[in-house]
Length: 389
Image 1 (cartoon, rainbow, N blue to C red):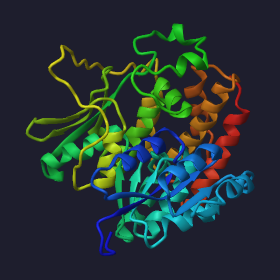
Image 2: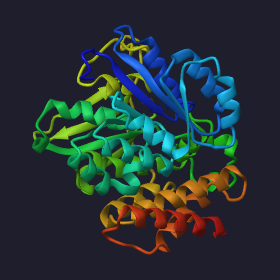
Image 3: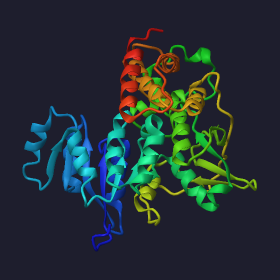
């Protein structure tokens, strides 16, 4: 804002994925007229991107895959939109003087570049790309501080923590408690997971998400990455972060204060509420998502995670304690391991084993530069691609 109007112009990175689509639904459903799609980006799904451009009328659109750019330009000949391509297009959109907020919904470490460019320009970033902080947490937070930029959480768990923390002073926070649905294999013993198929792992009980994050939820690696993200986003020590399994996915996370009070944020498992809060904060406006009906008979269950069957959480706490390049190595290893599992090359239980190998075999540096982190990322990917069970 700051142009004499109250419009918040939003660039959506990864607009064709599940978070991106929900973001455009939030913008399109906005009854206040304050939200507007200013730029969209996508990689491979350019047909859906064209549909989104026609329905939301952004100023910019970027195709990060160079191959279909000709088809995109031809399809949008009759639309008043500036068509950009590749990394330079993303940077142009997020750093545009008219851009107010950047919602980063790109999956994986590839999202780091967009966050970095936006923060360099002093923008507010609504962050759905947890890998940004897993890979480069200290560097990203230092950049935000130096540029007077801001990161606002989009993940439902981190949005819940962000909202609950407003019940007290930051110094009064004793710990945060992230909730996990437990994924599709909650309660299953390890021996029953030996022959899990990708189709089974993609059948999440409460959330509809993209394939990579759904597999991460099944292995609890998604929660592991969220633990690391919370450490940097909220400036916490590792022992201030706990995880509990909550199958109903209604309590999105909790904050315990020093006096023993526990403040929780509750809502149905729908991403539109945390997305909207990140786009309108500090204000709240009517949301297109469902409402929680507490008059219906129901129960909320909580239980500890099975860290023996799902060792991803142990990897997360190790990464937090080591810092440095450990997060980049773990994240890269996991991205390749998940892709190999989905491709039928390795088993479900091999995913954390491959991550362990990627973490163990990388060249650790306690204080890396951004360039060094990218090198660690590339080497860990190669290590896990060659890894055999």
